[in-house]
Image 1 (tube, protein in one colour):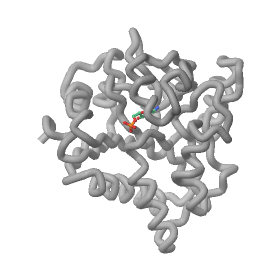
Image 2 (cartoon, helix red, strand yellow):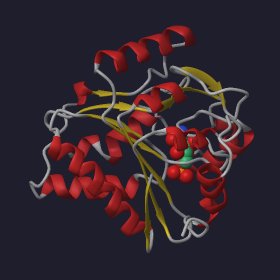
Image 3 (cartoon, rainbow, N blue to C red):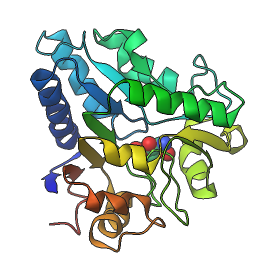
Length: 242
Ligand code: GLP
């Protein structure tokens, strides 16, 4: 595992964006696995900047996002499709037809998950998967569990995750209770993984996930078994790692 400890959020975002940019330059038609949450916003801004300056071309890039709230439409400003459009896709020259997010409006969970697995499969796998890290060690929406999930699955969000994400909603009651998420198995199949964690509140879980035992109770700990992981964090989140 490569570990980059950066001074602050902006530097960490720059580092993460440079790693994503390098992937796009090396393989212009690569498949990027993308993430939501507040962590990647800075990296997305950097990518937009590079694209606007003509340094980066997303015209052939394809993408798959990690997860989506069950029940939210793409137009809902809390949906992850909306997040991706407004924080990245609307501002770069990616073809939106080549971008994928689980279908939150599909009420049949089995169908939604099977359809998404088929999309990932049809793209030939993910070249670089970007991840954030939940406070309980969740990656995508794979919450602590008895076993590691395989493919896309429908999860009941834990109270901790609902509370953490409530800041984006008008009230806690508005946070959906379920989500469709790419499975741990699918994430582990990505050729390269880039996980970004920032802020003091992530320090404990970074330590647990990357220096503690590998257990589905800390889903991100499975990344210790992946052959090509890059961890980027700011000094606050990385304080136990240096
Ligand atoms: C959500 C997302 C995750 C993300 C996590 C952390 O639960 N489903 O993909 O990593 O939040 O979010 P943040 O980056 O805002 O701390």
